Image 1 (spheres, rainbow, N blue to C red):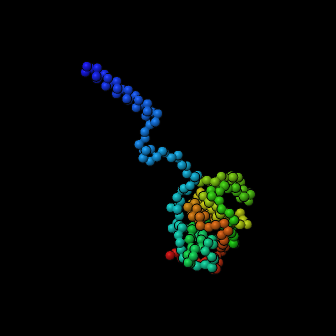
Image 2: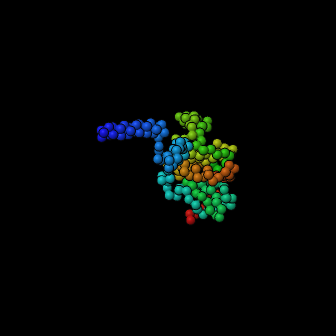
Image 3: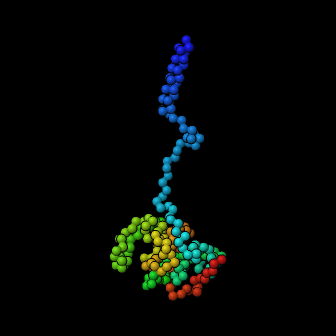
Length: 220
């Protein structure tokens, strides 16, 4: 009797386990899913969403900072201090956001008043014919991305081939290195891009001296 009862018990357990296994295989219970819901589809971040931190390569005075700035220009105006390689975004209350920049090398500086005609994120780069003539080894087209010389953002200046843009070489910030464009680190150009609209006024000061009416700055 004992052996028969034991055999019946073992058989019942085996049937229960088999049935349970079949049920689990068909509809497995996941305790984490019960608590937190079904897993979400993975989210792919937009391409190049987080540009490399390149601020550490800058001299101290070239870091983005708010300074006192006297000017007759209205808040929202961009002033390019070509000889000192600074860009000022005029703020209310006698202040400005100052950025370190790279400017045109000898023979490629210019001055005047422009407006921001259009803006682009991770812009493509097509070197103009004049640049190709001077540097025939340049590529004819570079798609937007971290290796693009225009960097993370570009703001195109009206009536010209010039831009305010980022860079893939932050070591050039503070130098007279470009063919006339104004370059910032990618972090700084993203910041500036977020602050200024299309139509913003841009004043580019001459290389031979700052216009007294444009402004004078001092660090707070």
